[in-house]
Length: 77
Image (cartoon, rainbow, N blue to C red; front, side, top):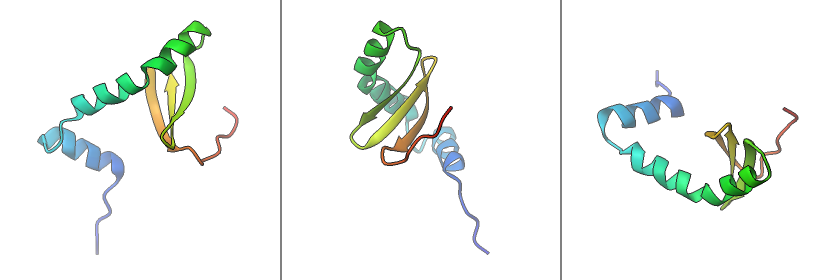
C-alpha cells in the first residue's frame, strides 16, 4: 500500500518543519500581484482574477484564494 500525499499536507509539512520558508514566497507572490490589485482598487473591485505567466490568480477581498492553470475555464460563481 502506498500513501498518497495531498498538496495541502505537503505545504503544511514544509511550513511546520521549516524545510521551506513560505513567508518569502508569500511576499514574492503578493509583490507580483501588486499592479493588478491597484488596478482592481481603482475600478472599485475587491474580487479579481489575473493571468501571469500561464497561471490564473484568484483574489477575493484582498486574499489570494486560488492559483489555477490559465487554460482551466472558470464556471459561474
